[in-house]
Image (cartoon, rainbow, N blue to C red; front, top):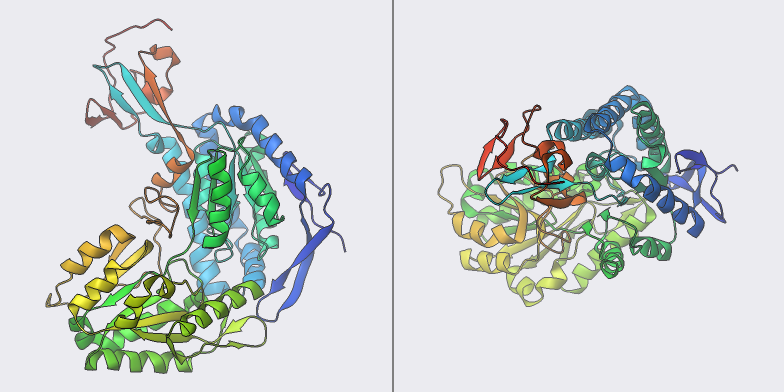
Length: 531
């Protein structure tokens, strides 16, 4: 069988030393589908890195209009190719073609690219700051080095290494991208890379600005992550994989932005349960099982009072979970990891109320609810904060408000934390909110955490171990762009040598912080230092 080419050095070419290949797997059947793709060796990785480094300065000096044109052109190409992309992604992931891929994920993908383009045109991501008295001017600027991006399995379009938010952010900051596609959806990634390559050439940017590798050995991945020629790394995946890459990057001083694991605790307060417990059970069930629970923000831990309303909630949820068909998981690896996580929770004392087993054909798992008392949870809190990636959640039953607060205080860092209170305000959510706030990236009230809006105000990040850095988000422009930027300061530098957004004249009307105030007018030059 012929093996598909790689995108390296601005062209599609055969792998140089690949002795292995792989094919995508249809998760609904477990059967191999589509063409073969190469498992790259050291020479392919080095070729990609060398060619990306060779164009880093050229891309950093490219006009913002060219970068924005590429991002907009790529977004339009994705929209125009929607039918093909959705068909490929559906075949490789078994995600619903219409309700998930066509109507939600693909539009989100192109919208992210367009929002990145808007941030480029407005210079919003550069955040210009001017101190006229001190003669200092600063902004965020390109790294002048490549960014290595690892795509996850659960979003074949919106988080794809060659199309998602990490990709859009790195390109918006004018850095070359080396995309490591996820082996769960290689044909989808190949199609996206083809569209990106064409849009890149149409925009007149260096051809080697975007490169893609399908798969390589973990040892090679760690070696690449530790190569000092890289500027930064973006990763979405497991905690084990993320920490291994981060350790390699740390040795070389490379910033590594890792989104790793999260159980996204949900606290159901007594008044909310008494008021609308059945509706909350339906919301929880939908959030836990949509996409077979394979979301970064899946509600993996739900805190429920030990009272009549809590018992009724659990009973309703059990009926919903019991009646639901097994969810299709992305791969055998996801299935095995979920089974191990559920088994570990049971070993530590959690009771499996429903599900807890795989089912054929393909990679299916029964919707699963486990339960433990808060007393038992608090004896071994670390062991019960194990992410079960899939349609599974742990219910923790609490006796009173103090126990609920103690449980919240025991939690590790998470992407989200949710509080449900009574609509009449009878539930006092303030104490829990205060405890949860430093432990989550996004604090949510009265809605499940599954959705992640593409908004400048969104934080899709959080304290460790949900991510490797609590100060950055993987979603939301312009903040996401600044992960892949360097802060450049100019001290008493002549106007002609400054970047456009830091000069005295501001013909583009860029919003700049001048002496502590935001303004978009020209400045009166008060100094003329020698270049």
